[in-house]
Length: 306
Length: 231
Image (cartoon, rainbow over all chains, first blue to last red; front, side, top):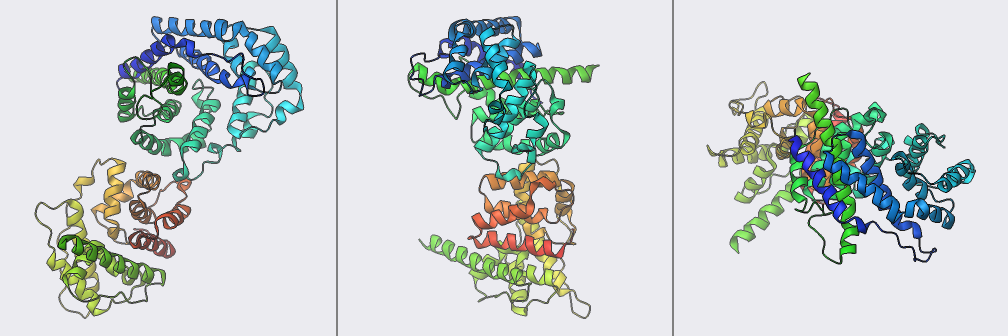
């Protein structure tokens, strides 16, 4: 089992980098609506989600929690213009689930924009919204978000799990990069981003406990840090996490002194905005994995000592 | 130049022999395995195949042609393992002796070549699943139905780890290791159903079967699966 300090430090450094590079969370207000104003919402929504996990788990130090709070505040006020950017997104593309998906974690953190809520209530009533032809794992996530938001999930999550790749527990040797991301996201959605490990049906938890070590070993050797980080999150969502020492040490060693986590092998070069776009996700994932793994390691210790 | 020429010759001989054994395994073990001229290359190639030279006969319970048996006998005496040899070398040699003894032993025949005491299996104690699978794949000739030894016991006690090693080998496109691990898995109880071993062996053959050594291991796995036997 990995030293808890190492698990924790990865997250502290990741958050430092995210705060220092907060201007990278930016929309493109002047982009041609046909090209996709909503394209740049994803990083913002992911940031709010991960900060939500950090507050929930309560294992962050006060300084780290303060930075997370300021990051969420900054992105709500500046990037999302106090929620107005989400309203605009809903007007440009009414049936897109993206503004709702970004809004949901902010709302859980106490922010609100009544117009987003009005539109969401309406879209949720429409058959078209539940009939959207989404990838099954994404659909699972949307239903989970609806439940969290207080809406009736349509379709119910239990009806969707069997359509996801993971829900069918297929041959583990067929897993490649794309499938692996489907696996990690199915786990995020089933466990409410690590809040409820018991949300994993036992059949799926057993499957993951058996095969996850192989995938971790593989993507560790390939130095694909972004995916490895997500797999380490999955590990922390299992009934008995391994907190694999070799993987965590390599993951921590790949992190830059300023806290940035390269997506693959080493840091990319380029203009600051380009580098941000390539690096923000693995760095967020590092923060996420760190918080969950630290929390699980501390619970294990509590079990051992009690 | 001379060395690489010999290397290529040896490699060719190993491939030819592997193809022969694989096709005998596919045909139910009735096709004779050619012994070839008893020159150094053949004996060296047999050393690479090890006990698998006689696998078709072992599985089909047919006597091997005398010259094939003789080639294996020559190989055993030509390459005694050095005292500092790696465990896989020692075990591979032991497996050849055991196979020889199996065919030399029948009721009315004369002196058995003693396979000698079983080598030490302790090097696999506490091995990581990655290393365990690698070593087992190198020692695939020990994966035969009904034959107990320390290596087989190590495999039997860790079916999930061997299954993990199979997945790892497939992911890394190490078809030979995958085929060897797959062959062991056909003999083990407790392999997770979600592995999908049958499809996995087909996949290994599809992707790596043009290498006769891979084809041999897949054919061995299938032949043992047909036999439905457990170690």
